[in-house]
Amino acid sequence: MDVLTENFALYGKGFLGTVQLTVYASILALVLGFVMASFRVAPVGSFRVFGTVWVTVLRNTPLTLLFFAVLLGLPRFGLVLPFQAFAVLALGCYTSAFICEALRSGINTVPKGQGEASRSLGMTFTQTLGSVILPQAFRSVIPPIGSTLIALAKNSAIAGAFSVNELLGTYKTLNELGYSIVWTFVWIAVGYLIITLSISALFNVLEKRWGIAR
Image 1 (cartoon, rainbow, N blue to C red):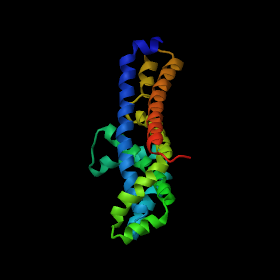
Image 2 (image 1 turned 30 degrees about the horizontal axis):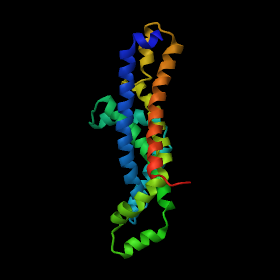
Image 3 (image 1 turned 45 degrees about the horizontal axis):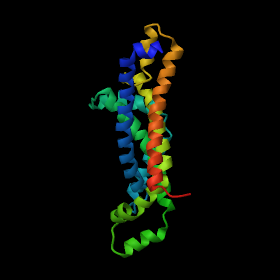
Image 4 (image 1 turned 60 degrees about the vertical axis):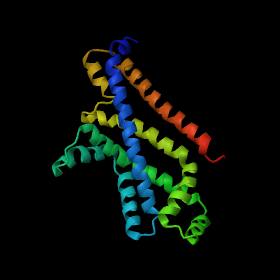
C-alpha cells in the first residue's frame, strides 16, 4: 500500500494521462471510423477503394510499428507536434479501422429495402445513410464498439515507450526509486481496471437504452 500512498501524485498523473489518451483517441477513432464506414458503402468506387485500403493497411499493421511511423516519420515531413498528439493520432487511426468494420457489419444488418425506399423518396445517399441506415446500425454495434474502445485503452500503454505520460510508464520511476516491482504493477493494473470497467459500464448503459433486444 505504501507504493500507492507515497506516490499517489505520480500515479494520478499517469492515470490522467491514460484517460486523456483514451478519450482523445476514442473521439478520433469514432469520427474516422464513421467516415471510413461511409466510404466503404458509398456508391463512388474511389471512396470504396480508399476505405478498403485504409482498413486493410491499418488492421494488418502492428500498433508499435504505427507508433514508430507516426512519432518518428511525420517530423521528417515537417509535421512537429507534442508526443501526446502523435500518440493520439496513432491510436485513433489504428482503432478507426476496427470501428469502421464494426459499423459496416451493423450497416449490413439493415434491410436493403429501407435504403431503396429512402432513395425512392428522393433522399440522397448522405441523407439515407445519416437518417435511416446508421441510426439502426449503431444499435446493433454498441457492444463491439465498446470492446474496441476498451482495447484502445489498454493499447495506450505502448505510448509510454515513446516519452508520453501515461499509467504504465510510472513503473520506470518507481523502479528507480527502489519500490517493489510487483506492487508497482498491481496498482498500475488497478488503474487500467478502473478505466476499462468505466468504459464497459458506459456501453452497458448505452446498450440497455438503445441496443437491440436479443
